[in-house]
Each structure stands twice: as C-alpha cells, then as structure tokens.
Length: 307
Ligand SMILES: [Fe+2]
Image (tube, rainbow, N blue to C red; front, top):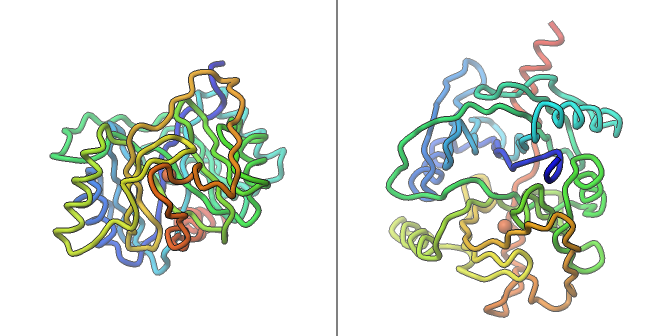
C-alpha cells in the first residue's frame, strides 16, 4: 500500500453562533464555493463549502456554541477504512457513529479522539463538477491543533491513524505529521487544547496579497504574513474567523515523496522553524483558536439510538 491508511485530509466541520458571518468569510474572503445549504429542523442551518471538486471540505453548522465539530479524514480505500475502524476500537476510543455524520459521504464512522476532538474517517465523498469561482484556493490542506498533551496526540496519529512524522520541534513542543506527500496534514503545537487554524492551498504568493487586499477593503487585517515557515517551507498568511480560530492561505508547501524520509529536528529556542523572514515568534498569533464541542450530528445520533 502506498503511503498510509489515511490518504487525504478531508474536511473540517465548525459550529458557529455567527452563521452568516462565517459563511461570508468562507465565500467572500477566502473564496470557497457553497455547494449545498440545508435548513434542518431544530438544529439550524448547515453550509457545505468546497474549494476542490468535492461536496465539502468545510462545513458551518449553526449552533448556540462556537467550536470545532469534527475533523474529517479520508481513508485510502474500503480495506483501510475497516483496518482503521478496528484500530480505533482496539485503542479504546469512543465511537459516536458507525455511519458518516453528514450527507455527501458513502461510508465511514466517527469517534472521540484525544482531548475531545471528534474525528470522522470515511471514503466515497460525492464528487462535484462545479465551476470555479473568480478567486479562491485549490483545496483544503491541513489543520493545526494545540493539544495540552502533544505527545499523546502525536502517538494517536502515528500509532492508530498511521501518519508519518515530518518535522519535530524541541522536546515534545511541536510535531508536523503527514498522511501523503504534503509535508503536514496535521500539525501539533503545545497549547491549551484548541484548534488553532485550518489551512487552504493556493498556487501563488500573489493570492496571499489579494487576500490581504480583500480584508483591507472590509476594514480588517491579516494577523500575520505573508511569511515563510521553516518547518514545512510554506509561505502563509493568516486571518481570524468569527468563531475565534484562524484561517491560513498558503503556497509552496514542502512535498515529501520519500515515505521513509527521517524527521527534521528543530531547536525550539531557534525561531527558524517558525519564521524564516522575520523575528516575530508568534506569541499573540498563537493565542487564537477554537475548542472542540460535541458534534451536532452526534447529538442527533444519540437521540436516534436512545429512541
Ligand atoms: Fe498551518
């Protein structure tokens, strides 16, 4: 089997008390397409959004809460999906659904992983041959989590979900992990248990400038960038979205085609892993984030199984 049991970062689902503002940021600032909108009774509206030609790479779920509903990962195939289902069960994680949490997905399951983050692992997302908009990224790229216990989440990703370690910073300070040639699909930096950002790939640094211009016209600002990172080599720009976490637009991420490439180890005291072009060390930057909340789909699932 090429690479590991997870083949792609799939999507992120976010609960938002400011639904219209969240969808505005995704469509008018970042440049995603809204592929479907559902007005489910009792649970509020759901917006499905994508950059690539799939049903969704981002979901906003209207909610009384602000936070991370779930992280969606694509299994390499039906056999990999079953292997992962067995591994997650054997590792003792609590399943919250034996089927996909939302529409547009053929098969999958969901469980509560380390530090309360819900992971949905699936295959067979509905393709969507939608027209590209006037601007916007190519696809969903990665998430950056700030676990309290970085080593525990790293071990979960490596031992259970079959990720590879690309870069290590300091003594359990940060790990960058990959599931395919992208340098990182999930990055971990020691923190308070939040998701810091979700990141979207584009082709050119010029697109990062245009993002800054769109924010400027709205009277808003990037919080950092464009900047060249050391770990991952990506050039990135960042803005804060309504629920409090950060959205990254990036280009020129390192691609690792050698599956056995040993991890690069960085000294945490040397800021070069973080910032190649300047001296800012990201203290205010890392104060943003959104915490996991119980998935709204799981609440419905619980109701279904109780009745
Ligand atoms: Fe990132």
